Amino acid sequence: MHKFQKNYFSGMTFSDRFINVVKAVLPAPFTIAVLLTVFTWFLAFFFGNYEGGLPQRFLAVAISWESGLWNNSLLVFAMQMMLMLLLGHLLALSKPIDNLIQKALFYCKDSASSAATVVFLTMIVGLFNWGLGLIFGAIFARKVGEKFSRLNRPLNYPLIGAAGYAGLMVWHGGLSGSSLTKVAEAGHLKTLVKDFNSELAFTLPDQITFAETVFSPMNLLVSVALLVIIPLVFFKLGKTTQTSIPSLLTNEKPTVKIAINGAERLDYSNWVGIAFGCIVLMVTLLKLFLQNNGDILSFFTPNNINLLLLSLSLLFHQNFTAFLKAMESAIGGVSGILIQFPLYFGIMGMMKTSGLVDVLSHGMVSISNETTYPIFTFISAGIVNIFVPSGGGQWAIQGPIIVQAASALGVSLPKSIMALAYGDQLTNMLQPFWALPLLGITGLKAKEILPYTLVLFVLGSAIFLLGLLVF
Image 1 (cartoon, rainbow, N blue to C red):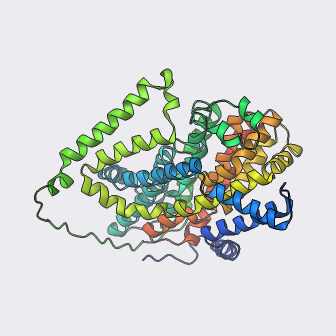
Image 2 (cartoon, rainbow, N blue to C red; image 1 turned 135 degrees about the vertical axis):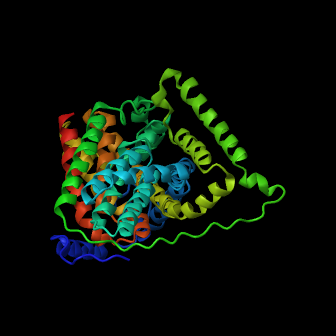
Image 3 (cartoon, one colour; image 1 turned 30 degrees about the horizontal axis):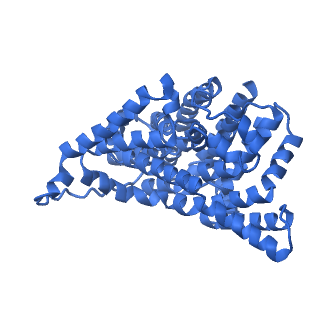
């Protein structure tokens, strides 16, 4: 779909080797989830604190796996995360978002200005919602490529594609961060650890609001640094890297008018769609301003965020037909969460009943102190994200370990959770799982954007580590 000079970026040979290594050691995310399940099963079977002979131990591990697999509260969590991604995707496909992109295209004059504009706006949107940021960045990058293709002007299209993926490096520190929204939910922390350590659960706060995480001084400063430094670096990259004219064909289908009769008019009625959207938005605003005892930041829980996204999706698409048509396009993106989350919950079930969580948390305590623990958490979260490319699934597995270790060391719990969030989102720049929608929309290949996502990885590492050390 597009051609580039072979030497457009001097690191392409390295990126080819890196892609080959990734393909050699990382199978599909579902396969990874299965392998992690088997690995945890063996650990629980041979090292877990189960009593009885081999048949009894086998049965105990199997029961603990199944109890986690169908854990009701965790399945609710999976549904919340699926809706957050789906509704964010729906927003990205709406006309107001498309209008925003069209206006932003005015500032895309060359590779440098385009890269800076795309990466800045994509990160802003990603801080609001990860699903919206993912699809917004992909569509924006594609529109930039189409603009330069029509104008027959050169562009570093892989750089623009990488810029459109940057929202996945900031999302967990924003309003839709999986761990941050869950700990803001009343009672979640206590429920998370009560089966591991009932005494600790009694001492934990009922919730950790966004005031202590998303809007903490550390995260605000880190977010500002990302929003300033990364666009500047991408602007410089756009000035210094080679370009070529992208060849992108738009396949715009002509609008076909169809006869609408009877009750079907309700499906196409903008008045009905907007009216219902306004009702949902009114309920959302009432909850925002009249509940939470005046603490507006307590509003940001998974259910309330999804309620806000639902109201905006309905309003932006205007009628139910457009809303449902966009849903058909977006629904495939949640399939990974639907099938993989229960496997991660099964892993958590085995870790819980076998005592592996205590072993790991004690291990973290033994090698850490108050200064180094957030750094170790950050690094371990980044490594785990390579194998568990889901913030929600990662929180289910690592959350209990982090809470227990932080409490034992006397380290700030909000800071420890932010360390996990930073590590989780950072290695998305190396993990190709969430890049698949962007690659499909832009027509780019993973090896083409990788040299620039590696730049994002290096910049993000420096900014996140500095934030954790300073605060």
